[in-house]
Image 1 (cartoon, rainbow, N blue to C red):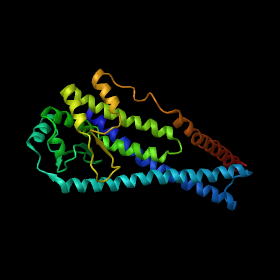
Image 2 (cartoon, rainbow, N blue to C red; image 1 turned 45 degrees about the vertical axis):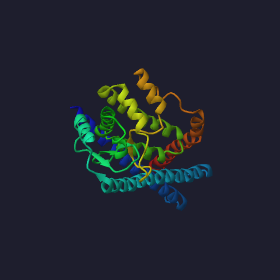
Image 3 (cartoon, one colour; image 1 turned 180 degrees about the vertical axis):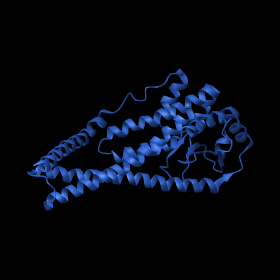
Image 4 (cartoon, rainbow, N blue to C red; image 1 turned 60 degrees about the vertical axis):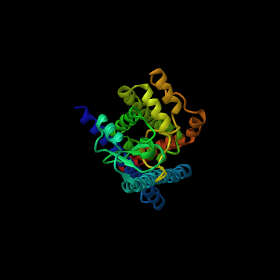
Length: 292
């Protein structure tokens, strides 16, 4: 039952991503048509003030920027993901014995690829068919228990299709750039998924192997930066992750959104509110014209 719920959740995330992109384009096209129709006198809207028309033009520009930003991020991550997949295929090597044993312990056999790279890292990538990638640099520097902790962490990302969540969050955050607060809140989703993966590794392996894995998996692939992937290492959240290891409690990653981010979101929220008022007035004007 849990598997079906998880699949439904992943399908919902992807559907929201697609529908959101289509909605932004549809809104942009409808706004452009409304402005052109009003200018040519074909729309049944009377007494449109210069301020309302100016706001309409501004919202067309805003929605155009929103659609362009979101679609551009989607396209870049799609291309980067394909480039990364090709690189993984080219540099894949026969799994080392310790990696094969760790994959069997974590139930990841068949989904783990070892790549010939001296930098120590591990990540999960792939939207449709996620895979765990581990570098030879990491397999050669970690103990058996630490490598198992790495794979437990990444297997959690794989089971929950976290690369899809990364893709969706980055796209929505880019599209909603006029309101930076949205991007800050969405980033907390990625922070939470990283901490959940750490807790999965903790339950399976204990504190010491996870701590060692965090200290050693500090590298990252230099190919296709910005790809939607879920990595074991990285400087972000390191303090919160270490605190979670020390205390066993979930850190409050949602606690501190900078005041500057909130203030920078005010103009965007005002524009959206103004658009809502304009849309309401347009609907009233159309209804009155159609009735009379």
